[in-house]
Each structure stands twice: as C-alpha cells, then as structure tokens.
Length: 438
Image (cartoon, rainbow, N blue to C red; front, top):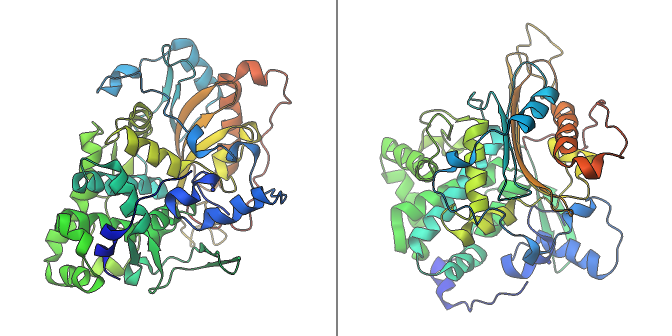
C-alpha cells in the first residue's frame, strides 16, 4: 500500500483496551486498542484492570511548565535544601540514583537529587528517544502544519517485515469488527499505522515496534518529502544498497541529535542502536546506551515546558506516555491509584549461572538495571517528576521502586497523605503478564 494515498485523506479531528494513550483518543489517533475500553465505558461494563487515575480525558492532559520559558533547564535545577534533605532521608543506600522535581507550584519549584549524574543502561526507557526521533523528523517534513503530522501518524501504515521480529513479548491486537482481542508476538506481515506502532512501543514496550519506528525515522531523514511516496520495496532496497557504516551513522544521528538539541549531553543520555537483532545485518550499533537521572529529568522538564520540538509535539508525546494500562513497578504504588501518571520503565540484567544457578529474572548478579521515569498528577494539584535508576544485584527491585514511590509521594503530597495508613515494603507480586522489559 503506497503512502501517497495519505494525501487524499480528509483530516478529521474529534476527541476513546489497554494503552498509554487517553481512552477517549480513538477517533483522534486510530489506535484500535483504545476502542474496547471506550466501549466498556459507554456500556457501563465494570473494568477493574486500571485505577481511577487512568481515566483522564484527552482534552484534560496539559503541560505544567509552559510559563518557564528559559532554554537552559539547569536554571530550574536549584536544590531546595529542606526538600533535598527529606528525599535523601528516604533514599536507600547503595546503587540508587534519582532526580525529583516538585512542580505543584510552577512559581516555586522544588528540586532534589542523589547521584544524579551516575550513568546506567537505560533499557526500555531509551524508547522515549525513538519517540522523540519520530516527532523530530515529522516536524522537519511538515514544519508548518502540526495537523498534517498527526494525519500521517494516523493514516500511514507500514509492515513489520524482519525489523519487528525476535522479541518474545506480545502485542495486543484488537479486531473492532469482531470485538476480538488477540495477544501474540509481532510477525513479519503485521501492518499498523505509525500511531499504533508507537503505542505498541510505549504501552507494552515491544522491542520490535521500537525497531520499526526507529526504521521509519531513518527513512524520513533519508528520503525527506519522498518518504510520503515510499513503498516497501524501495525502502528495503535503500537498506540493502547503502553502506552499513553510513546507515549506522544515520541511525545514531537520527535518534541522538534531538537529545543534543535539547541540551542533553552525550554522557547524560544516548541510545546506541536498535532494539531487535535482525536489522543488524544493515544497521550497526555505535557508542553504547547510557542514561542518567539528570539527563532524563532534562527531557521531562523540557516536555512540560513545551520545548521538545514544539508545544504541540510535547503534548502529543505526553499523551503517548499517559498510563491507561495495568501499572507496574514504581507506578504500582497504591499512593498513586487516584493520580494520573505518565510513565516508562526499563530493565536490563545479566546472570552468571556458574556463580548462582538460581539467578532469577530481574535479579541479575552481574548487572541488574531497573529504571523508572514518571510524571505524577494528583487531583489536589500536587504534580511532580521522578527519574529513578538503580543497579541492585541479586534482587528484583520492582518492589523497592514501588515502596520508594510511596515514600516519595508521602513527602511531596504530605497534607493529603498524613492520615493515610503507612505503606510498608512487601514482596512484589508480579502480574502474570509482566514478564517483559517495560
């Protein structure tokens, strides 16, 4: 299916299953998975998979720091000594690093940090860089019309091909006509819109979807306006005929240049390559991946300012990060049930079975990275950002992240939480579907 048919499509915007995107956003995005929960709402079907905070409306999602016009976010990272002391008091010793900004009062920001410049392998948190790359390239192709960019996201459909293969994690596929939900691995013939692939990349953290959208960002950069007329055969010919080192350099530039443009340094956050192995025959890795709490915080603050590309793009990326799926790890804290959360988690671990034959998933004894970035918005106006990165060996840190999330919320949301039962650390019960690198 050639992409030029998009030009003939009338752009219509109206503001409606599991996703990171607001449930009432189906008509706007065309993400089919949203349709089911929207129908549950319309038909008053009891749906207990998601908490109260997941039902925020499309139009109610806003940016919180648009009044902060500075281009240098470092100016906003002035440590509040009292706030910093309280955060350090509850932060565990050892391989914990974090940065926190309380933006409840934009005119009186509170900031705290701990080992904020220590670098970690970001895991799936790095997929946010792919999200940025796609929006960056679309802005270059359609600089004068955000509506055109959204239309392309909604109506351009691309196939997985080999790019999406090799990830054992499933994606949810909803058949609207037959009201049927299927969860399975990505196959080569799968075809979804750019919006849907982005949703698969963020909501269920599918590695194949991340590589597919990485590919599309590269093609946008390589073909420019001809991207809209590009078919599968021509795209694959490009990868087959372009020298591997040229493709590797393009991939590295496409995904990392936008981070540099935001003032995020190479050692603060960079992405080294694709998320699946099959495309490696054409595109190599370069520079390795690293993230720091400070680098990730810079991105999220810029997002709240509306300065990640532009205000409309920043808001759209924030919608894609809005958690309307089951909550895991940090976001699973019961303190956050009533709050809207915008969330991405990532993990990466390695086990030495000779040292410990029983080394478990997410409890690596060589390295054991677990990372959470989150924007929390309570109904009482308390709003804050947390970037947490850990490397605690021999332990699944999901429960520790969840416990720390509750303690941080008690510090920031003190008045509302003062009479709530104390949260105690307990063994983390993994959701039966949680065996993925989120």
